[in-house]
Length: 393
Image (cartoon, rainbow, N blue to C red; front, side, top):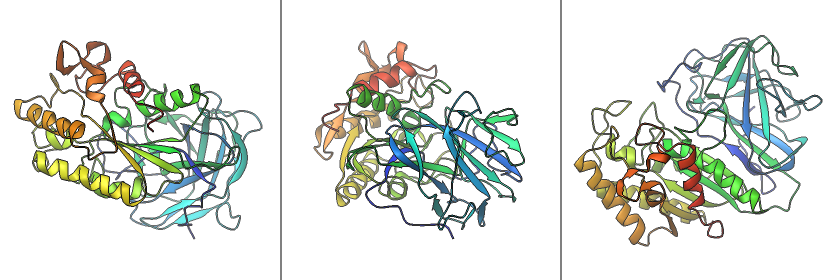
């Protein structure tokens, strides 16, 4: 049986991602076909360390039971290779090497002794012997995952892993314990593609939440920073390809994370631009400023009900992008004015000012533009992270 319990105060999130329906359309990946007698090796960078680790696996969008035949965790070497002597076999429940996760369910491995440092990369390997059907996954990882035929969960070298992908599959979290006193000081970054890291370099760990974690570590106080962004996600509208609307997935993706104190919300530009014909997944119902603000108020109420501090982030520029219309810009300005001045959020971070061109505040600074006039590049994500007050978080 898959464990549904999310472990007590000893566990804290070290890495996370929000899962998506396998019909997400961007780029070639393995989600729709799924896996059969495959080993999938996935590399993630943790933001806080410990002396034990466990993984979280999701079958949220599966149509039937998912059988994980076996799994390992190890320290990453290069590519699909792992460091000698670091492979740890994972168990589930009462020590069994395999686990069956029901459709819609989540499973946690047992904790395994492994010393993990903040900002260290770990490699999680899943062996999937039986056909999985379409795979719950996260489409945009800005990282490389690997696939091999047969059972290679314990391989040290990566030579068997002939295929690669830029998505994550079934893996939704890594948690750690030990190594430091248990503290409730974690941060969740919640949002859309700009939180997800679209525009950042492949394998560079330069999304703005990554840069924030690096700032904490450089200040001598590493903390859990968890990225729950989904490219294309909206606050008020469901989309099959870009996740459930933010007001609903907030409960599943944010409020279930252990050890969290603060949430940063950067979301709403897809609600504004999504009703147009240029929206990547097809148009969604038009959202008024009032509806979008009420969506933000819902997120605030949910966070406060769980005792979390919630930080509102202003929406970043869209001038020259496929979202740029006078009506959309007027909505963005109105929402940003409310975020800055209403006092509804516990604190505000002005990402709009952090990355906009001082000579044209409706546009991204060219040095921060990934090329589409909408998504920041690595330098832009660094500027966003630097705009956050560490003490306020």
